[in-house]
Length: 225
Image 1 (cartoon, rainbow, N blue to C red):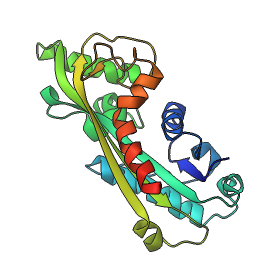
Image 2 (image 1 turned 120 degrees about the horizontal axis):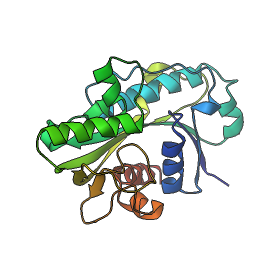
Image 3 (image 1 turned 30 degrees about the vertical axis):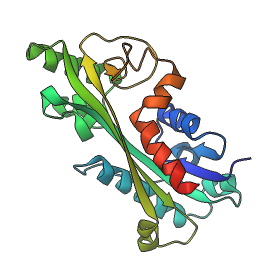
Image 4 (image 1 turned 90 degrees about the vertical axis):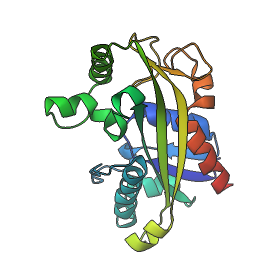
């Protein structure tokens, strides 16, 4: 029996599954599929934390004003929280890019709306490094998580005051030759520090022990304990 219900502000099933696996059985993790009709948050902050807070607040305010949303039925009297994650890759040789634009890195160049495919984003990173004569570069994954306690009827000021943030970083380097077939995003290119395999080659258990998201979620879990 879960102790809390968290709705993760994403429809990325890989991300929700990763968060659920890290947090464990004490937390029931839902997704935006459990909040049909919820508004889209425009991620226009220059920081991961700013985007995470904006996504959390956008969803929390909407849920508080919609007590008939399916989320509340699934929460069934348990403490309810909104969890929003903003994370991405920073490559030193690219002056920290793609950074907050990680999910839509290739789309920005093409002038297309929305996020890019993983294949397009990886291809752009590889092309930029090769054009600089590099076959690898130091890099890190950075994660910021915003957590908001939410209840029906709560106002935006109350929800903002109840929002906490947690950060995590995983250092490593990037290869220009993708390796592995698991994971998502830039995982096939990223080799975490202390390992010889990419995030897409490591088992899920190993990745979830060392990832940027794990480090942020450990801080979150300790705060809820």
